[in-house]
Image 1 (spheres, rainbow, N blue to C red):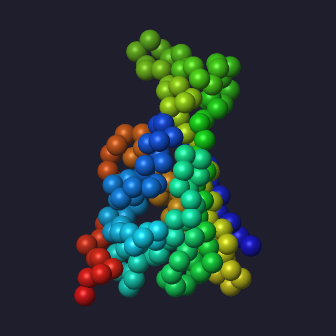
Image 2 (cartoon, rainbow, N blue to C red):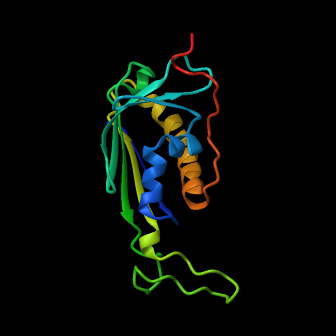
Length: 173
């Protein structure tokens, strides 16, 4: 079975990244402006899409956020799950400093890197693709890569920049 896996380091505390994945304001800041909730199911609307993506929140804590597909749309997402693993970043690669110490700037006018506790390593996975749906995985992976850049930018800067902007609501006639 195919699986998309992407890892990135984010210069923001884990709680900031978690809020970007679990709150309405967080999700609408980097993914889509069309986010709603029906109990434990998140509803994501996108431009020119006939119905929302429905993702059930299975887990949402400081270590991991897990969603499972709970709808029939899009058909190629049937049976898939999405996992976001969050951990404090263990320090910058190639630097000997302790993980909880900020890196010294190379030049006096450059700010120090955030301490490891203020940095988050995010491992994103989207798996459970059913036989016959794998042909869509490369396109979905490309979109997730672009979305994760927006998530990272939002967590680091607070700049709201949703990838999808829609006025469509799932409950609109």
